[in-house]
View 1 (spheres, helix red, strand yellow):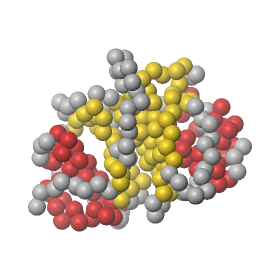
View 2: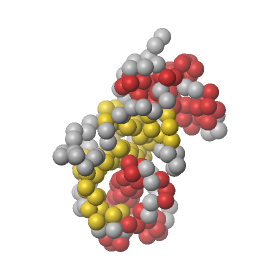
View 3: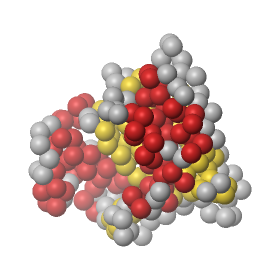
View 4: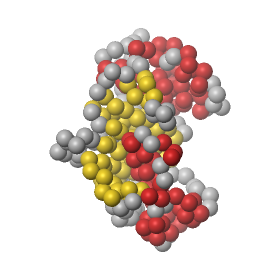
Length: 241
């Protein structure tokens, strides 16, 4: 996974025609500033990262979409997924596995208890509502982020009922020293274990408090789902002059 603070990549905007299509530029213009810059930068960086993996020109990267608009690479064994939150952009890449990623900046949620009631599973709801307000906010972001990455990996979109999604929710203790956190989770839907599927949850502290999640779904032939996952912040990009 690669995590970008898009404010650090605005130098790319002078090369916008080299790393984005007219359709992508028109889509970005629908957003108010500064989100329009963030949107086009995410399109550009997505093409740069994927072209490096595919060994082709950024504008040669071709996408196809399923019925809920999840993008896939045309004629490739690589899978990818992206997420945005303000100035932050996350992209995850796997080989021969479906992937979903989610990124959230921990911000205040109005009517937090009502929000939890609306989407959490019965088991998770009991645990979350018992927490103190600050912990409740963080773990609600944890919970939401995990579920978002899960449904994105499955390619189900918003039709998935979040209240039916369960995983090993142990309410990890939040370190007062602001140390990064990483944990693996196993999934079930309607209390039925889902084989070959797992998620990693990250909490990272930069100039903002972030929660990230990546979920991968393998094939039946896979004997090991606990593949190494790594997160790189603000990587250098191979770009042409």
